[in-house]
Length: 238
Image 1 (cartoon, rainbow, N blue to C red):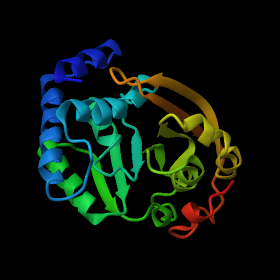
Image 2 (tube, helix red, strand yellow):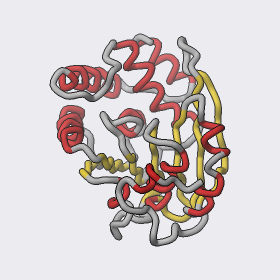
Image 3 (tube, rainbow, N blue to C red):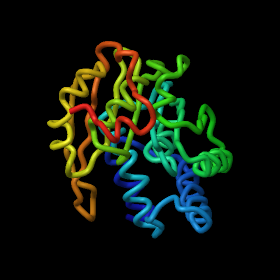
């Protein structure tokens, strides 16, 4: 996907980019590749692949949800900023908090935000399990996102405690999404969520399968969740 195709396909979905936003994606790409030479941020570095598999793929959540409002969004395990930073560029009204367990990635994101001149963004070095128990963050976010971080049963434990009641957990998954969600019904309900909508589609050009799940928070997550670091992954709620 070249830059022109990226701009055109977003426009078809009603997302019209300004010249400043187009420049921000270009700067994002250049900064990602530059920093990737000294630390492992992504295995995908070819420009057309980054625009398709990182930028466009991240923004697909905005095809099904209105991000054009001052929502408070928390992105769990965003790595090099996906999906929240591409979404933030396209929908600048949102407020973004990224939590990631690797301090080097946080330094990259701080530098990136400075290069892109983003406002209302913050980056926190923490494990999702301990972050979710912090009073100021627990059930504080309108939207919590995660993309390719862990299985849905694990993700639900990490993300749903952060979603305010009435808010939404947006899980971005590949081809295994339906199977994961079917196996996680008990966990999602335990943490206070219910799957409200799901969308399946293929990424353009390469036709790989994508699934996006919108899980609404209907009741408070029991206080003991998330459990201690590492426990959700070792002993997922089935």
